[in-house]
Length: 173
Length: 173
Length: 173
Image: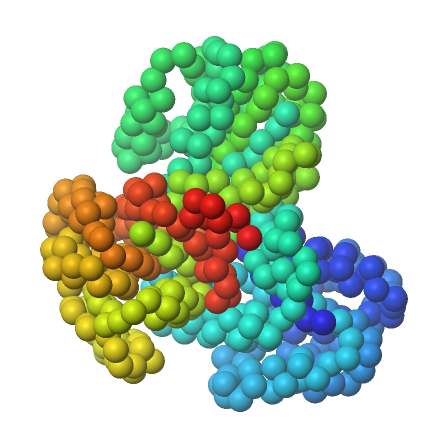
């Protein structure tokens, strides 16, 4: 079972995803893709860790997300977030198409529940700079591919999950 | 009864909220948080007033929104908009956490219907400048808190309200 | 029958709209509003044409969209996209209100199915520059007017159509 949680900045994506994960038996694996590039980012990472509390096995995986998903075995996993993983791939000039395929294979092969959190970034004005435009395009493509594979997709709005793709047997309510 | 109306630029948020308010017995209280910083803003304010027409008690409350909500008593109130109120708090270096708590208390204590309009600004690329990032974060937090308290939340898309949180007994249709 | 397909960058808008069109008997008319201003744009246009494949009558209509809709007669038409049409009108200093009215009249008079694709651009931070703000406002107004006329409106999220305005008799599922 794969659930993709998209949402805007401070829309409650991670909090929603954590609630879903906590409803499963622990321990839960938290795959953190963020890297502390500057003080602002370090502060966000620290605050998020404190808010999460105990019961989590936290791993920092800025790049090797597919391997970490395989290593998690049957445990419930929260990937937070796709956006920073993609940023790391882009800035490190990795092959994004290959990394995406590896991610999709690892996701499809998982026995346990996987929650993936991503920022929806494509609903504003076209950005001025080319890197931001490329990032936006890559994020859109990545989200589409994961959404096609996922059993459920939600878009969080003001902390509330709006169901975009319901699981089989679940109405879009 | 509290209804939060989120939406993008020119998505029909205010027009939708006004329709809901006009279905109630008047006079209606319009709490305008906008301040005319420049000609473009003055022009928007004037155009919106003209479009609204008669039957409204309009008050300009750039900062003192909680007090104005209490003063409105049992009347139906439209707050337009949270985004400009938050902007005024930020630019005036007010304590946003305290102002938010005061707003939530005033909302929870209201006997009448309250419609609150806010711009959803978190679904684009991360902004370059730190103030815009902070604003985006604060807006997201504020919307989440109001949404948790609200009886109903909608997101307007091209003038059409998409129900994010239905009122009890109402399907998400 | 008119269907408006809104969505963010790389959200699967065009692919969804093409799927709907292909379910109709062909040949289908593809009204392309994009102009190759630079290499990046030329590359996008070429890639999209290749992805679309055979069976389409493609016409480039950067400005004269209303006339092209009338000329298409009873054929099924895909307009891709409103955003570039509006950009062309703005940059060419055309009368947008008049062009919008002409578009709405042409749409209302069409006997065949019309799919219109547009970028939702209003859900990010207020842009710094005045032209981008004006574009955002004009796009919002245009989408609202077409949505009011349309039989169906969807917002694509990660490739999945979220129904904003269902056709009569169809639940919002």
